[in-house]
Image 1 (cartoon, rainbow, N blue to C red):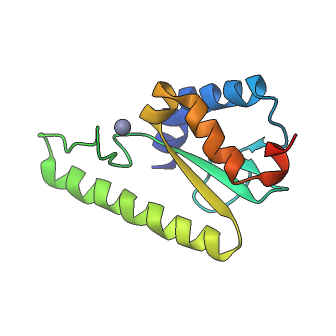
Image 2 (image 1 turned 90 degrees about the vertical axis):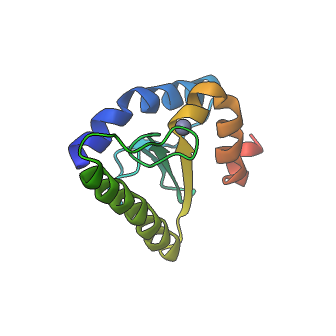
Length: 127
Ligand SMILES: [Zn+2]
């Protein structure tokens, strides 16, 4: 499970790091130790970012249940969705701002996602 999560996200994670560099956004860390293993975290701003793969997190546009082993996938994918909600709740309770980015929206319009992240961090935006 965690293996799938981290390896599946590597490319999109790199794409986001690239956007941070282009926009001179600093202060982020990879693999900061938090529940749910977020992809990138700004510890000072208490903002943490998950890049959600369209398949694994059942994106409304691209999520689908494979025809083979349908029952298995239904359970697996709904467990993932439930886990995402639990992690969001847990982190927010601890005072973190959670930003979830769909894999597809990062590819399609990364700039809009950067704006979302900056909105969560007033100090960075004013630089
Ligand atoms: Zn998608």
